[in-house]
Every structure is written in C-alpha cells, then in structure tokens.
Amino acid sequence: MQDFVDQAEKNGVTLLRVGQCQFCGADYQKGIYDCMDNYNKGLELLDFTNPEYQLSRFLSVDAHALQHPEIHGRWSNHFHLTRLNLILDKQQQWDYKKSPLLSDYLNNYKSIRPNELLNIPNPMERGIITSKHLTKATTAEECVSLIKRWADEVYLAWNSNHSLVSQIADGFLKKYKNLTQTAKY
Image 1 (cartoon, helix red, strand yellow):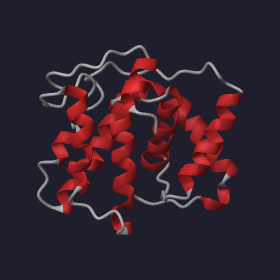
Image 2 (cartoon, rainbow, N blue to C red; image 1 turned 90 degrees about the vertical axis):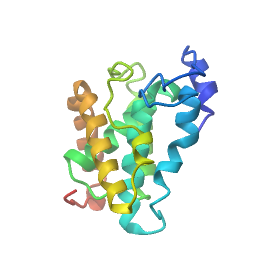
Image 3 (tube, rainbow, N blue to C red; image 1 turned 45 degrees about the vertical axis):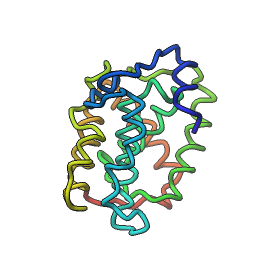
Image 4 (cartoon, one colour; image 1 turned 180 degrees about the vertical axis):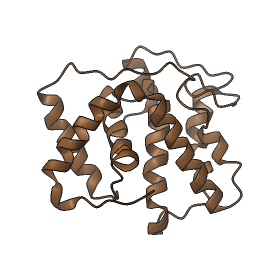
C-alpha cells in the first residue's frame, strides 16, 4: 500500500497533525497520524494465525479503509465496500485466497468503467465506532464483537452505494461460483 501521506497529497487532502482524526473522529492528539499508528493496537487481543479470527481481520481492514477513504486510492473503496457486501449481505465465507481474485475482478471491472466513483460519506459520518474503541476491549470475544459492529456501521454509512457494489459482488460470485461458500456471521 502506498504511504498514506503520499496518497492524501495525491488526493488533494491536507492531513491535520493535531486533535481528533479528521476522517473517523477518533479522539486522538495527533489526528490521522495517531489513528494510523494505533490501528493495530486495537487488534492485539486477536491471534490472526488462528482461523477463528480471520474474518475479524478482513472486517477491520475494510472498516478502517472505508472510514479513511481520503488516504487511499479511489478504487480501494470499491474493493473494501464490495468485500463487505460479500461478507455482510451475501454472507460469503471469506479467506485470504479470495482477496486477490476480487482485486483481479475489480481491475477488469474498472478497465471498462474508468470514471466510476462511489459516493463517499462525509468525514465523521462513517460510523461511530472507530479503531480507538477496539483498544478498550479486554477479551478477544469483545474485540470480535466490536469489529463486527464497526464493520456494520461503516457499511451502513456507505448505503448510497449498496446497489452498485451488490451488482459488482454478483458478477464476482458468478465468475467464481466454484469458490462461493455461505456462512452466517
């Protein structure tokens, strides 16, 4: 992933170095810089080598990326929102080998729709839960529950795009129908 400072500059965004995170609203002293530095601290209760926590990894990455779209490339939004649609709405069991397939599918998709943009919710209106809330968890189970609620909130905040990403997800599922497995989350 390109450095978030460089990507923000490319996107014409000035990053604030003081106060809360200007994108998710997390209560930090050094804004987005603290938000990025502390993201993984909220996940320390989870052993991601344990398959039981694999889903939480995907959900947390997607939630964080979609709360901070200004520091990512614009097609990142398509990827993370489509993956949330596949997991949350289409109830697909997700694993590490499916992410590169989704990325490849989106590369083809965007080649014929180079100007397509998602409607980005306003900063600080992308879900109330932030990565900072995860640092308050005291057990792995509590952390998993917070991550699920976080992903749900962020996904809901992007609801004006659900129809489009649902169509993208349907195309992905059609292409890779041999890999689809439903799961109830």
